Image (cartoon, rainbow, N blue to C red; front, side, top):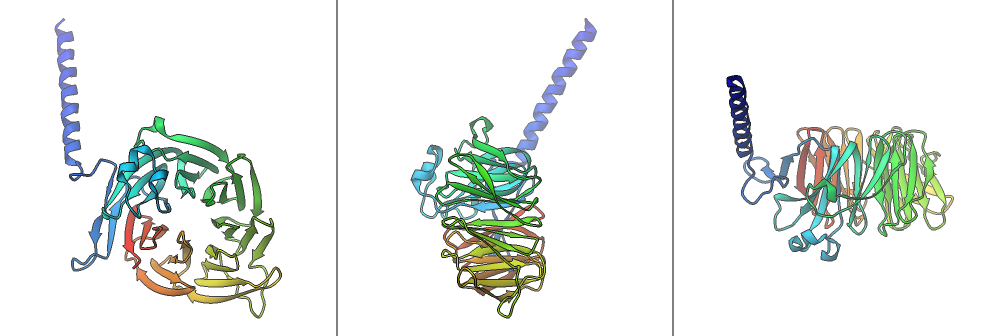
Amino acid sequence: MLSSTHRFIKITLLIYLVITLDRQILSAFQTPSGLSKEDILLKEAGKDGKEKWLTASVRGGIHSVAVSGLLNIAQMPKELKTLHEANCHYIALAGKHFVRIYLVRPSEKQKLLFVEKIFSQNTVRAVTFSGNNGYVAYGDYDGEVFLYKITGHKSKRKHNQRIHRKRLHIGRVNSVKISQDNKILVSGGADGSVKAWNLKTWQSYTLHRHQNSVTQVLISSNYIVSTSYDRTIMIYDMRTREKRLLGLKSGDKISLHSHWISGASISEDGKTVLSSGYDRQVIQWTLVDRDTVTSSTVGRHFASIYRMFQSSKGDLLVSIDLDGTVRVWKAGAVSSSSRREKGLVTGMGISPDGTRRYSIDNRGELRVQSLN
């Protein structure tokens, strides 16, 4: 009897100690006033107290970032409509087993408001928003692509509305994009394939097979573009279903990449393409007609260019090299250049109004910087 009483007392004391310790830990990590547990508070960084950028460390590290278009109140879930204001937009951060979606409001420049968290069985490598900003899609390291509706139900996993999932690649998905009319999802993988997924019929098909890993896919109103480590650029016209490959033929009026192509952008009319590569070049391609292409080098970095990103309007480009230099391009020319002191920039998004860039690095840091 005494032994049973002693065991009961020991168990009761143990439970009390666990609860007390848990409360102390929670209080030690309490968030600032007005900030929920899942919101991100951005801190000012710079020299001499002068603000140059805003930063935050994200739990679990970040492998990919995406920025939505401008939100109108009709596109937002019921739970978020009261938070709507002009020029607000979503930002998605993806990493090991998660995709987190935040709301960015111009009136709260140093705060990212938590919207929803989606659990992933595998590490997420690529993430994107739909044209109407109502859906988010991501690709993982196992070759699967997922499409979710944004519900704004915070971290309640049972409320996550998965619309569909499909294995499109063998191995890692490197890039995903959704068309502005929300009818087509395009993905590129480490297996070299470029896949198109019809979001109405759920049928998928292969647009092209590169000879090496796909680094980026893009989709405009009429064109699909992919870049690859095989040093070629694929352009697919969705109206005529014609496909062109750039980078195969050299000539007097042709400049080619001598190393992997890391990214690209395309004009709305499909006649001008800018590409970046590990050979440090930014090349502009001009598609004169169906049979004639010219290209020339319009700029260089001092180190291999790791990625190129295009704003939603298409008028702004950002290139990043392995040395940490970030360059902003307007009308095919460098408009500004900045240098990151630490960390390799692994992903970037541009706000829909073109005033801010969101970058992530290999240390799990999110950085927000003005483009004005």
